[in-house]
Length: 98
Image (cartoon, rainbow, N blue to C red; front, side, top):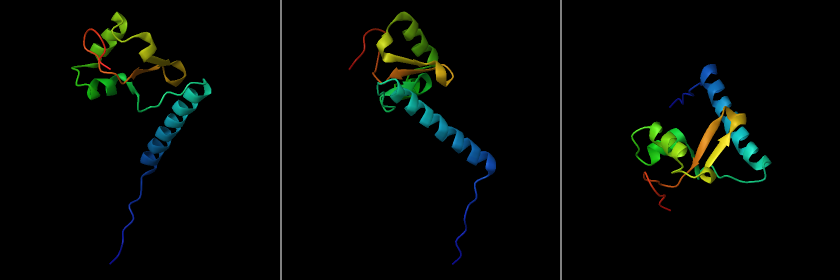
């Protein structure tokens, strides 16, 4: 029986390499600042929306503006395309539930 090897296109390989570099940059940045932020505990706004079943990312953005999500639970990383990470704590329109 002959085994076939699937080849990855150069475009896919480039995307994979870019993603790996991005993850390494994020981990490196967080460690360089002397504080560790485990990526399992911090989510992008889009991932936060999905994980906690919210209607849209605007809900999270509005909570951030109104202070429902406290500033210490928002990590702003300007060096990585101005990404904002939210601590993976469930919130309602009012107080957090830990």
